[in-house]
Length: 293
Image 1 (cartoon, rainbow, N blue to C red):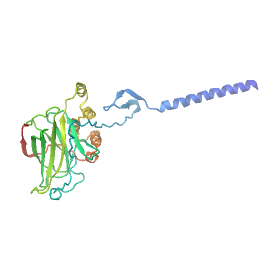
Image 2 (cartoon, rainbow, N blue to C red; image 1 turned 30 degrees about the vertical axis):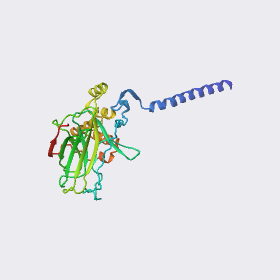
Image 3 (tube, rainbow, N blue to C red; image 1 turned 60 degrees about the horizontal axis):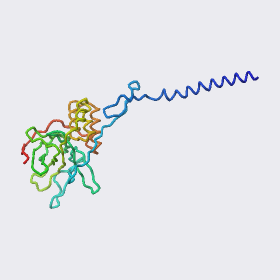
Image 4 (cartoon, helix red, strand yellow; image 1 turned 90 degrees about the vertical axis):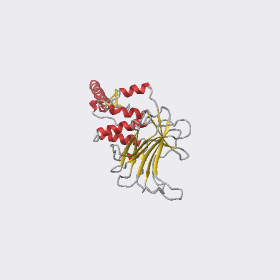
């Protein structure tokens, strides 16, 4: 009996040891392996190729602090405004309204600041326009320096359909000065007699210089990912323009469309993110360029 008991006891020890080994190996075999030596465009880790799964990443815009001095103020959305005699703007209401594709902050006192940075001498602006060229409305873009001197004024033709249009400064316009603030306006007048106020958006843009490390990073980053570097560094205008140009070259690229929606969603313009991107530059009805004094 003693020898049989010992044999049974040894058998049970072996069985339990094997069972423990199998249990301890199970989660290791089921857990995907993360490769810390490889990262995606946005700094996130991704699964190794043998796991055949990629972690979803999102590019967001990092809003830099507003520069010292008087707050920029501004208006990111258009809409009906009351005139001096209490009349509403002649422009019919739309959903969404005229919208500037720019970052904005809302302060505790309900003041909205529309402000962004650029590195370009002659940047581009993007606007969602809800009205079409079959309407007898006049549209105008204007730029002023920080002393309220007019730098540029351009009449814009309405697009064929509602969507996002691009307005760029031409080479004949004086380059934006570094560390100087400029105020821009995009205005739609729907009343030929101008008895009613227009609908408009406005904000402030400031040109900055990139530090050497960021310049090197951009030079070594593939074109499809450069916009993410701009966004992370708080350079809104180049982030949006770079991504828009990528979409222009690859209009059927679903990944780029998703990135466009992610970028606009990061500045709370989700309702504009799915609107058509009208990449052709609208024709000008009038062009006026004045040198800054």
